Image (cartoon, rainbow, N blue to C red; front, side, top):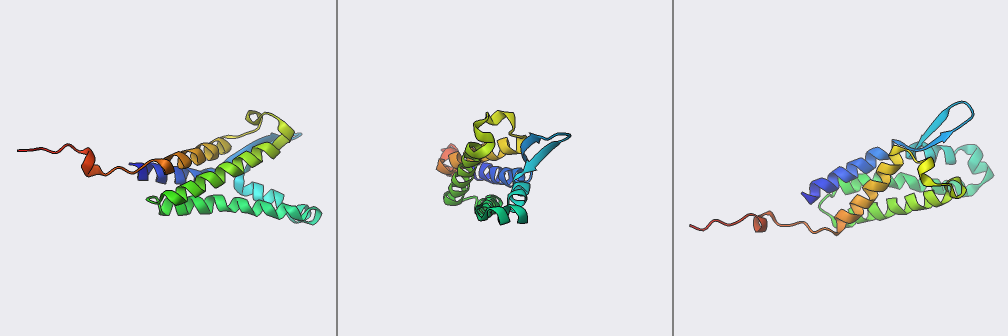
Length: 142
C-alpha cells in the first residue's frame, strides 16, 4: 500500500513539474510559468550574460530526475526522502525569493501547489514503515 502511494506521489511530482507553478499578470495577458519553463526563462542567453549566477536554476531539473528515481525505486525509503527534502527546499527558496515577500497565494498556480504537496507526501511516506501483509491478516486455526 505504501509503495503504491509513493509511486503515485512520485508520478504526481513528475507531472507537476510541467504544470504551471506561477501565474503572473502582464499588461495584456496572463503568463503561466511551469518549472520546466522557469529554467528556460532564467537561463536564457541574455540573463546568463548579465549574471552568471543564473546557471544555478539548472538545479531545478533534478526535481523530475529525483521523481523518476523515486518512482522506479518505490520500495526504497531513501530516494523518496531525498526527492521530498530536495523539492521542499526548492519550493521554500522559490517562495522566499518570489515577488519580494508578497503573499504566496496571490501568484502560485495549481502546479506549484501539487509540487509542494507531493514533496510533503513523499517526505511523510518515507518515514512510514511498510507492513508485512502476512502479519496483518488474521490466522485461522482449525
